[in-house]
Amino acid sequence: AHIMEAFGVELFEMPPAKGCQDMIYVANIGIAIEPYIVLANYKAPGRACEVPPAKAYFESLGYQCIIPPKTFEGEADMKLWKKGHYFCGTGQFSTQNSFEWIAKQTGVKTIFVEEIDPQAFHLDCSLLVIDEENFLVNKAGLSPESIKTLQKLGRVTFTPDGIATTGCTNGVLIPEKKIYMSGAFNPELKDYQRAMEFLLETMDKFGYTTVFTDVDSYNASGADLSCSIFHLTFPPHATH
Image (cartoon, rainbow, N blue to C red; front, side):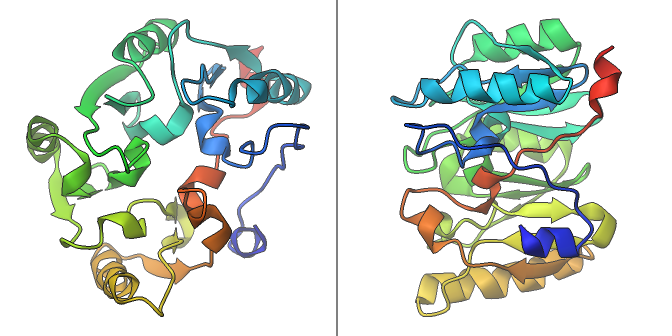
């Protein structure tokens, strides 16, 4: 958090709720699509307790919240491509029905991509939208048809074989500063060494400096840096 603040990012901290040990992974709690905070409807067991305190928190800031009737696990499964268009990850935790419901409520366009690797829990484990024309993709995480869809819409850079579990796509872009923050930091291990070298070289081609941060405590739970970030993309007064 301190590193992000040093790069000029304004941060809000959601208070923890008793008994909700995974609440730190706020990328699953919902997504901000003006004029709503679309809250999660969890499939993952034990996480439903996170929704009421999150709803209370966002409403205390002045936001209006809605919840889809089917399972949906937040911006970790719904990645902004360009204004009003989102890539939506189906096949594991979020359903196509939920994305269609969100589209109807908000007016956004949805592009469905299928997640096929049970170890890549959400779409952020397989897709990083660098900009409107460029995507970083973990090939093992998405169906061949989904990869073809991405290739029709932009230029795809694949992460090298053997580093799919290092979290290359699970970082956080700070476009204003051209910084890519990554949790793929474990220089003692060969696969992470390869991942770090790959990210430094690849993101540099897109004008980004990669900054690594230690998220070993997240990795122990199968999570990564992007899991702990919720993008609050519009001010609450926009809901009134």
